[in-house]
Length: 151
Image 1: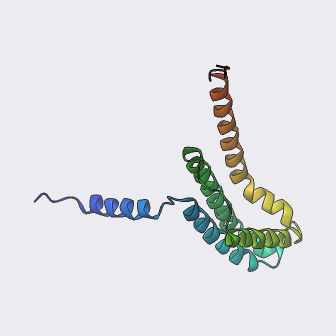
Image 2 (image 1 turned 60 degrees about the vertical axis):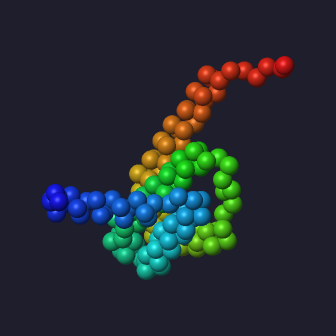
Image 3 (image 1 turned 180 degrees about the vertical axis):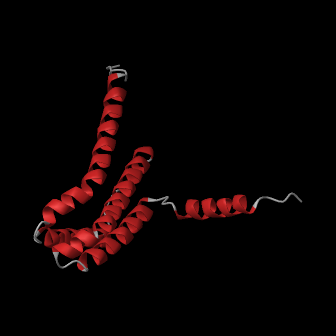
């Protein structure tokens, strides 16, 4: 039996675990989004003043990036399987509402709106660029498709 380096075995185990955690259904994506939003809200609730907000900047940026990456992955997933029902679960709507309320509360802190805008800038840019490239791909497909003709 051939012996494999320890690092190779650990890498294979890691990849196996990561691939088994990847969402494969619309419901999986919503469940993962709920988990991310729940953690995000939990961390936002701990912020009560601008000083705390400043300290949590990196963590908030991480939450925005996690949500953005999940949204992009979900959009790619939906493009590959357009027949999937995209109806949001009640839990997903509830989590999104909780996140919106907490962000609104943070906006009210002195400098809160500016700091949140700064923290989410990279995630917003990434999502905007993705949406722009997706739109351009659709336009190119439309331009190169054959016109419908009456038979």
